[in-house]
Image 1 (cartoon, rainbow, N blue to C red):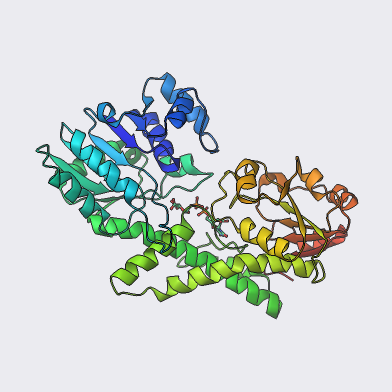
Image 2: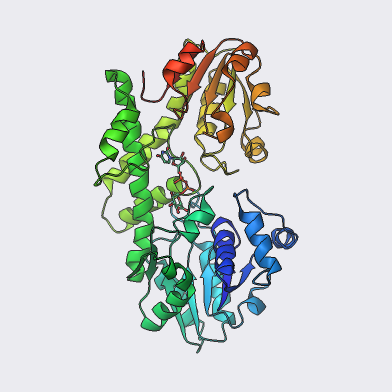
Length: 434
Ligand code: UGA
C-alpha cells in the first residue's frame, strides 16, 4: 500500500519509518529542503533512539523515500497523512492550524485518485470538518474522505510506542475510509493492538483528553509531593500506594519539576481554548495549567533554599536540560524557568546535558555548557539534577563531592535514595521526601 506522509517532523518521520517497516511503500514529504537533503543522506533532524537505523534499513529496502514535492509524491497514495506542526498561536494559545490548512489546500489541488486524507497532527475538534470543506470547495471530483488518527507516541520511546500502541484511534465517517485505515494498520492488528473507530470529532477530542488527563495525573502527584514535604510523607510510597489500585494505575505518578515538552503544555492550553469557544469550561485543566506553570519557577526557588536562601554569586550546576531523557527537545523544559529563577537571584549557572546542549544554548545563552557531568559540577555550590538521563543515575558521589565547592544536591527527579546520598556527605533534598 502506498502512503504519503506530509510533514517530516517527530510524528511524521517516526510514523513514516514505522509504516515502511511494516512493509508499506512510504514517502515522507517536507517543504524544508535542507531537512529532506539531510534525511536522504541519513542524517536525522531529531535525536530519537533507533530512528536513524530504522530509516536507513527501510530506505535500503526501497520502502521509504523523501521528497519536497508534494504533487508528484502523493500520486497513487491510498492514504495521505497530514503530520505538520500545530504550535500554540502566539498571544492566545489556540492551536495554529495554518500549516494543516495549507496542506489541505495543496492536497485539494493535487489528488487524482481516491484518497483518504488522515490528520495525524494534534488538531482541535472540528479541524477535520474544515479540512474536508477546503478540499471539497476546491471543486475536486476525486473521491476522498478525511479521517482523524491521533498519535500517542512519546519522545524518546517513539518507535516502541508506535509499533506496540495501547490502542489505535480512528475517527472516520465513511465505511470505505475505515477499510483503508484497517489496511494501513493491518500489521498492528496482528499484534492485537486494539483499534477504536469513533466519529471524527470524538477522535480529535480523545487526543486532547488523553494528554490533559496525563498532565492532570502528573500535577496531582506533584501537589501530593509538596504536601508530603510538609507533613513528613514520602511521595513515592504515596504514588505506589494509590497506583496499585487498578482503577488509578501506577503510570504517570512520578513527581518531578513539572511537565514540559512539545505536547502537554501546548495541548492543555489548546483544550482550554476549545472549551472557552464552546462555552464549556474545563476548570480542572485550567488549574492544572496554572499549577504546572508556577511549579517550574518554584523548583528554582527550591535550589536557592538548598543554598541557604541566597544564591548571589553562587555557582549552580544543572544536570540535564531537556524536558525528559532520550530527547534533545528543549520545548517548555522546566530547566528554562529554573535557570531564569536562578539567574534572577544572582547565581551563575553551568549545565551539562547528553543531547540537549545544542538546542539549549539558543534558549539559555547565559548558561555555561560543560563538556561532561564532572566538568559541570566542578566548583559548584549546588548541583540540581533536572532531567533523569541514565548517565546521571550512577554518579560517583565521592568524585562529585570532591569536585564541588559545597556538597549540596537537589534531586528534582528522585533518582537517589535520600539515606545513601546523605551518607555520602551530601546536603540532599528531593521531591516529596524528607
Ligand atoms: C506525551 C504523551 O505521553 C504521549 O502519549 C503523546 O503522544 C505526546 O505527548 C504527544 O502529544 O505527542 P511526551 O511529551 O513525549 O509524550 O512525553 P511524556 O513522557 O509524556 O512526558 C511529558 C512530561 O511529563 C515530561 O516533562 C516528563 O518529565 C513529565 N512526567 C511524565 C512527569 O513529570 N511524571 C510522570 O510520571 C510522567
